[in-house]
Length: 264
Image 1: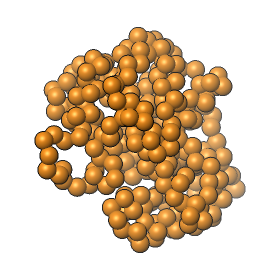
Image 2: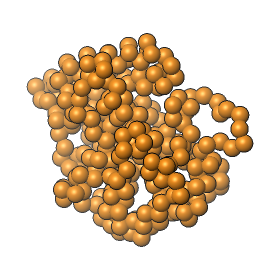
Image 3: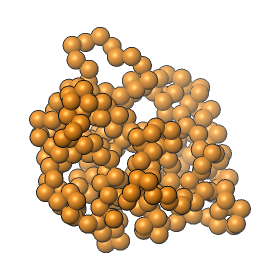
Image 4: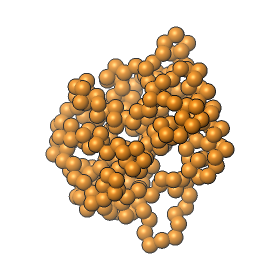
């Protein structure tokens, strides 16, 4: 998929105006909507949904923050205000299934919205990709990343918080990539350093920043690609690669980008 290629993305309000109701809400998230790097991941995943002929839509300008950063930072009132606003919107559109490309959004929808009355079938895009490959509906070409040394960084909110470990690894293997695990992986994986609201504050005093420590662990695997599945992780790994002056020989791709690049 060319990064310059324009793709058509259905919007929930436009479908509702025609009396149509898609099966899935594709939740883009703040990073997917506003961060220049993660916009490419949004586009990659949308192109995959279109390729599969998936019945989906995005909220577009009606989408707001889930409130997760507010809760992580300790502002419970703001979290509940944002969550209740979204729950009301979801009810209006009769949304039952949500696909997310951000583990933080996935976690808050799946595990924290139900306490406020918002219960949905929440699907991480890595699970969606893996199940699509397993069913045979998604058939990525294995040429581009065949034999490539790929190490995968487990996002905290996919891994330890929700035990999603195997799906992203199976996707990488479906590309015929050579998955090389870091010393600390799965439930022992080190945080990228941006979780729990750390993304939005200055680093605390210490001998080394967490993202540098994690990047060094990734580099020890001698990878061609560091694969990520979270906007925060992508930012920190990208910064770490630049900090180590390795951006010419190590690339950071999201799992969705690996698949999209292998489709055409």
